[in-house]
Length: 92
Image 1: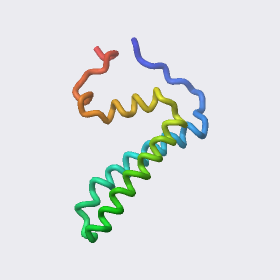
Image 2: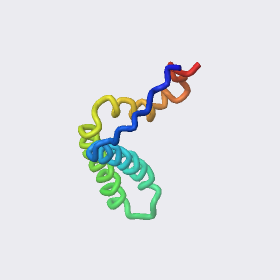
Image 3: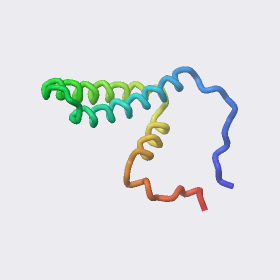
Image 4: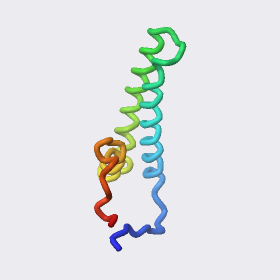
């Protein structure tokens, strides 16, 4: 009771592309966090880390346009550490 009903409709190509761009956003942020620990020269690390962040944010904005603000809000709430221990309001 209270569970979401999964529809059998096929998602449009732009929606799937948007989800892929949101995943790339997360991967690029992880790459930016790992970059300082690589054996690259310091100026190279700075360029790579800032490049990952800039490209990641651009991909996030494009992906957000494709999937819609509701999906982005839900996706970001999963990534917020404040919400990790909260129970879903439909679980009981």
